[in-house]
Length: 112
Image (cartoon, rainbow, N blue to C red; front, top):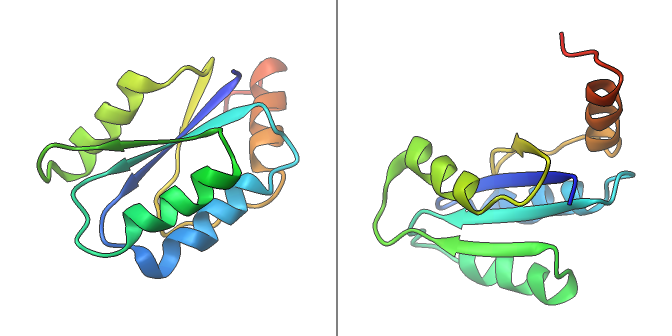
């Protein structure tokens, strides 16, 4: 696994599918998606599960209690298997070459 994409999730059912589609549609495919549910009270969990049924690279972690953004990201980071980690907010949509460009630039030593 080259890249772990960590998505903190809390009551974002309106945006979550768009976010996941933008990640799954990447030109770079060697990644995992870790969705960390921070005790959402909407249908986020079922949205994630429906995507996971179609793509085994998606993992779901559920916080025991609502913990906030920082702790939720940390919980995802503890489960990450990738060589590199990217945090994507659940209401974000990324360009289809985002992961490929990021990975290539890091490997070429272009960090800034």
